[in-house]
Length: 319
Image (cartoon, rainbow, N blue to C red; front, side, top):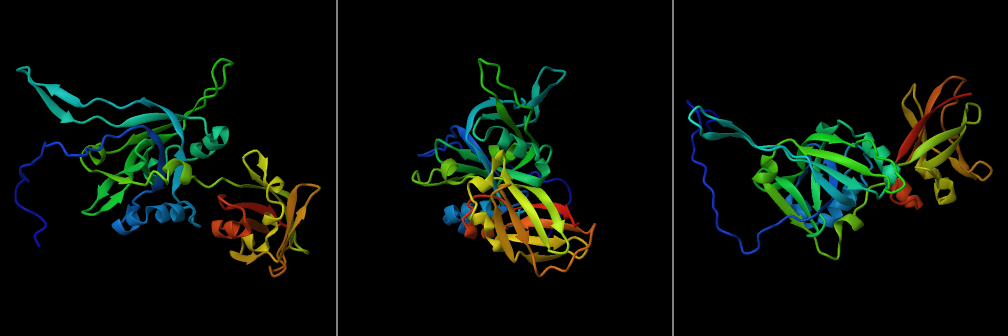
């Protein structure tokens, strides 16, 4: 098959302007879903979209995980106008289209969510974005090939500094998103609708972040480390004192060898609202050895009853 030709391609572009019986008119963008850049959604996945979203949001691999964000409360359009030029004879000619750019405002999640979104500042090349049409309960995407779908490529992504409470107005949190290629929305948009009984924003929520804190560094002779588990400002001991004491949810890795061993025992420590993690099968460490304590993956946390939380890890130095 020929893959090149002499001269430029001057194929006539055709368009059809008849009005469909049920034309799609986007309503309020109530949220977005960030997916790893290049992620393709197949027709088979679309037919089981609830299962597709559920599995992707809870993926054990953070690099493959989908990140839903919402509920947005307001929008400021920051888009740019089309670029035109005027000829010497006074005719105006089209040069290129403008860029889609939006600032979405939210309060749900507050400073906790702002902190997580700030980690994504400038990382627009690492993610594509799916728009959530809250009113129509639909996902807005773009075409990928003849039959597949994908999120929109981004040219801008960041969480601006918050505007703190003034006494007359509440704290304002926002997220700025810009699309890289307006053609993906203008010409190649696709919509995946879902039943009203499965409201997208309420049903598909992101995993809550976990932050680990070392209370007592790992003791080489006993292979024991004491860890406190946080989610935002909440000590998860208060909510999951039994569930987080599940040994199968914890691992300790010796950084020098890269070998991880599952905890042999985990005990809740009420006095410090923490957890004592023991890995009896791990090779004995000596003072100064670097280790990493891992909580997760997501499937292990879910099995333990710690639902909708992400995996986490922290370093510790043997004493």
